[in-house]
Length: 263
Image 1: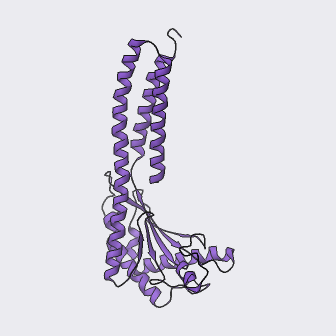
Image 2: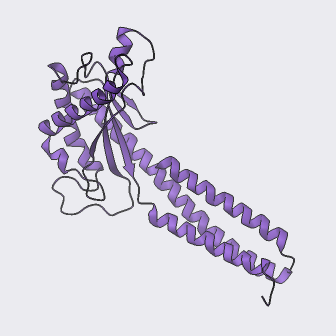
Image 3: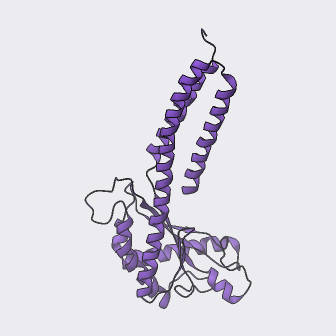
């Protein structure tokens, strides 16, 4: 979502450059040029403010997600559980030190089940502070700050075995982890996003997202893992509509000059 937002903003900026060049080339009426230039300049100032605000919201969402990841990492460390954090992609990686899956297996056994329980308890403590609708809240957040949209519980396999089976196996691992999380911390089901939907979700990637490409037993064990991917939501719809309106207004002003009078 963040990458898409930035892309949209760049498209608007390119459109503005095209409008300015078109304006300069196609009008030679000095009086009209001055009037329209003043109006376009005013709208450009408004647009710059809107773009700055939207980029600020995107940066705030990234900052909030990084704070969430660090909170989780620090509290899990206090529980004696070492996890890996990938801030660039919003991922908390439950590595082989935290969860070990047997070859061709999706069951959480012994220490793996215990560690998922620790993760569930920590998520139950931390996530409500970042959710638009925490468990037990009287109303959902409606301010402009970044809220948690989704937590993907992502299952993975190594590259051995039958590919079709690995897709199902990775999903089973994610589902079993989800079940254990909700059994340990039932209130996680009541942590909702801005639309009132549960934030927890599951997905399986088979062996398509390996973190260690080596063909060794140690590498295979690393790739049989669970990742938690955190996606933040920013209420940017209204802001983008305002930007679109400003661009349309500038286009209309320039159109007054490039259309001959009396037609």
